[in-house]
Image (cartoon, rainbow, N blue to C red; front, side, top):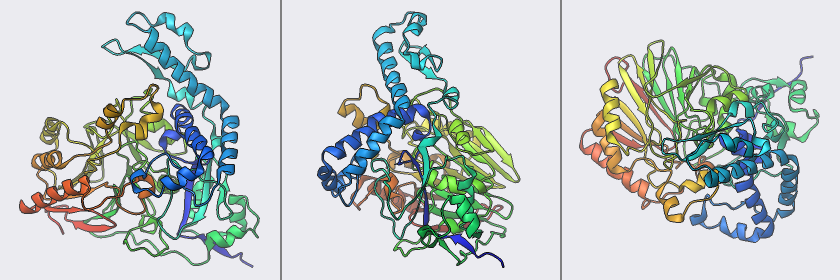
Length: 537
């Protein structure tokens, strides 16, 4: 008798965790994880244990959205105390390594005065020896370079910190991911498996392919009578994805900066962030059931948690044929290598592209476009925009790039020509440097300086100059973090008076007056383009 087969329910979240904290790219690389642990996680945990009632009040204040406050409905300070205790014990080596990084930084600031660094190698903390190179820049400012590839092979990269949590959602409400750990609950199946495990691929496949109870039990390491069989699985098959077979370019907007381009021959997915399907919502959306069975090229623009979303990327891993990422200058503390990270967590066929480098296949050319701004003036190279030409039609995905220097894009336009469709982020009132990069700063930053170096995209003037340079027939404002399923990552909550809304409204009005089709995307959008005529189909 054939065993019954089951699908993973469409609204099951496959949530990656690092020591119970929401996993994002800076928590994978050993050094940035350690610094986030001691300068973010441990501080938040101590604060919550001391005054849980303060956190409970703070999360009710919209002005404090995205702040360092745990968001729980009840007092869970005892569980947080246990999590802190486990963290200090199990991650002692990583903590010591990270503190040594701060000690080295102080040593260089106090002792490296332009003379040879050679005598200072003897004073490098022993735990760091062999993992760093001491350097000056051309202005004789001291710093160090990390041998990150060696760190991934060391005891400081500990895959036992990695796990996934499976749970069912029926709405878009979630605590802000950088400040609230995922504690154990009777409604959550917590699996201690590393991100590189093929078990994650099999679990992800279950949303579209049925598995027997015996297979499910083996993959999840649970009893076949477990309550999670009923909670997480169903015999009802999901809606079937229909492969696009038309002769146009189909563009589908999935929210935030996630765009899917499809032709009858290939598809391209940009910055995957995908909503879960299976519950009622006031906002229409495409979801994971609208993803092709195979993704030919997935493009990543930059290394922020709302563009490298592991919660989406890990479940898609088994579908991805080629992952295209910005080329990173390895060794910078603030700029961990995306290539090393993706390889460590099990991705294959990774393609790095640099500024103005092209990738050609079929009748398509993808070209890397320089990406400036939105990174608080830090020296970060893991960022690139994309120009995609399919036959005679071209689209440009500028993500959160801030047009600080229009001359750059005049140079780019000379090489690639005018563009038919431009997608541009206009989050022009971003968080200060410390909101994301604060754990990496040894000595902090004065408030006025911190607030002047924001994670901001283009404002009206800067965006208008981009439109004037590339002369698109259509312009779409995206990557605004407005969709309700993005809020737990971006912490954005706009009103009609918010500066990004006012600035993007001005651009939309200007474009419309000039005969350019323009729209601020929200929820979902589907368009078709003719590859030959350069016109909307």
